[in-house]
Image (cartoon, rainbow, N blue to C red; front, top):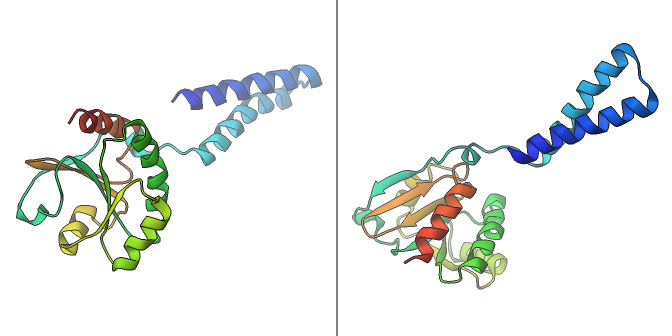
Length: 182
């Protein structure tokens, strides 16, 4: 919330400066003092929208069953689709996590497609991640619920699932702490 408050205050200070320098009077002054902070806040919001996960810590925990055997333990698995721009964007975020904690294993699992989908991810992600093709497409699709990328933390007895909307900075911090301690 701090950047939003900052831009609101910055817009208010700018409007006060302009009103003082140009000596606006009456309704024009009030309109200017109200509209400039709102416009500056709106512009910031247009470039950096608020996501649901930024204010909540939602995730889904499921007990592991035999269908999840392809998920190796103690790693983050990103259920993804080849050509997905959001999946590509997730690589940039997770590269930063990987640089801070090189011991963390992050696997991009291609849920639909063939080996050319894996090749697409390998070209984009270089050697930072592990890449594989989903063996049980029905199970991975059910976990993702049609939303890609979906993040799955695979542990011994359970899996934790975040959709793209839920995978916030808070979730990333928790994940880094958990995986770097293993």
